[in-house]
Length: 113
Length: 114
Image (cartoon, rainbow over all chains, first blue to last red; front, side):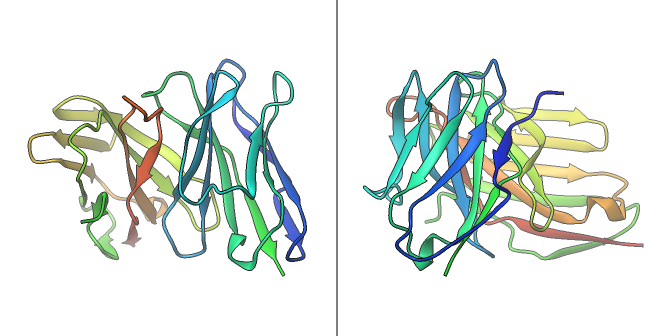
């Protein structure tokens, strides 16, 4: 069964460093998302991406964040200058249409020291 | 008012019992509704989706939707210890400026004890 994959599973970085989190969505899906979950808190929407551009972004998704689909398979989230409060699980999700089920990847645990 | 609110839990039921999980949402424009299960340290895993008023059954799971009351529920029959997890209610507006963004509740922790 097709699944969303994410790498790395765990990333440790120093405050102020740039990180890139990578995702490979399910191949026939058209809508792509990043969510994050701070430990003990709810899952929060960061950004949606469709037709090679951002469709919607949350207040969390400020100028330090960017997304890219550099080729036909990868979908990346870049944090330019990480802060301690960026420490969280980051989930990538994809879906075929805007109201269909979103399938989540296993997540990347980001730890900012 | 929270956008998506779930019964706070934690909820503890004996094995074989029915577990009832509830969720209310504030946005009347919401179009699709999902229940995800999340084990500790893992990603959300879809349990049920529901799009129209009424009941939807899948094995031991039944989702119920009442758009007039802005209410979604999940019933788990014959609960098993393996059902012990956090259950997340998620709501999708997808219209106008919203392209499928899921808004999650805070989750309800369910424990099924033998």
